[in-house]
Length: 410
Image (cartoon, rainbow, N blue to C red; front, side, top):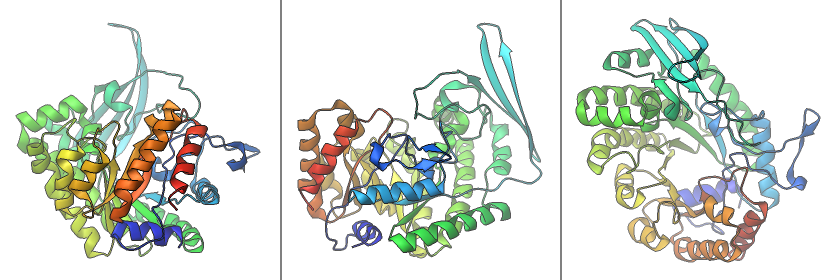
């Protein structure tokens, strides 16, 4: 079977030759024999274009690098998925200006500001420039203030949505893809389509921010307090993000070579929301998204790394086909419990964790892989994957042990 045949069969619960193994790369340094030359030097770290709109990488990475990564994994027998981040539209009347300054009181810090002028008024977004010097391979803080970025959350001085008056302005900054975004997407898909069809690789499109988008705009505390104290206002912000998400999803669903559309949900878990708030603010829009996907013959994937034991059933009820992730380490859900709750109902991705790989404990790595394969493999809806990615500090020797143990089953 090709990777596309095997992965899509696992997504659908259909018969396939063996349990797939996939790996997301977030700055992983592969062995020398798997590296390739680019602009006169070796590409040292691997990433994915999944993060191209939400992270600044420490070195360049493009779609051709994605293709070479796919082929490198394939040489080891590992399946891969091509990932496309769908662009969104911005009101053409919007303008903005970036500035930076040193603030001496109360302490000397560097701040960066982006001011937007929208048809609904001015919006200001200010964050600290903390100036870390991360080790090679890790993502870095941008030299400006993008609307959506994990770095903004803990460094926010004035979040993009600092008051209810800011919410209408977001509609001008995050909306369904405009003509420019559509052309960009179509150009990217033309390139992806050629490689995917030639090499038998599935394609998934990242289309929705959901609660991740909300927290990027408000900060964690701002989002939670708004949801509890001003639920109607908070609902308007959630709806604003959902409208942009839906438009991106419609564009992805219009392409016959997209196999699955995906929604981020790192900030939609029990770490942030009670089951009641999840049902009130996440679930309704999630059912709209899964309905759109299924109407267009696509699968729907959702990311949730913690709280799966409690909220996973609601994801299944909403029509989620593929759950990223089942994590026995950081989420502390056993693979036996995962099978009991979800086995056969939706495809489970995970079974082990990059923390386990970082431990360099060969026995622990083998035990986790074998347990996941023994318990979840027979469901026919399982993909082995180290949650949620491998990083610059992931030992190559540990990944090798994981691969060798997985190969005992294929």
